[in-house]
Image (tube, rainbow, N blue to C red; front, top):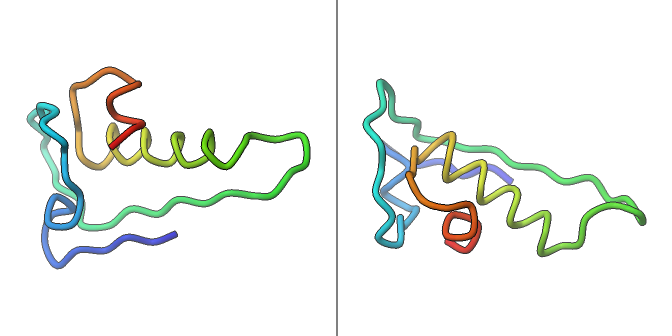
Length: 71
């Protein structure tokens, strides 16, 4: 999955009221991927992991893991 915005990713991603930390850079894209594995994560766990990465690395959010996974 590749998400791209013209400027900041916050154009297309809603923070859901979670406070954003100051960051020296603002990304305008994020990529996430998953590989099928019968013994791997469920679809919900995989989606949550991708959302947590987006929340922390791209949007620089300062919320609990539970909040950021459910964006």
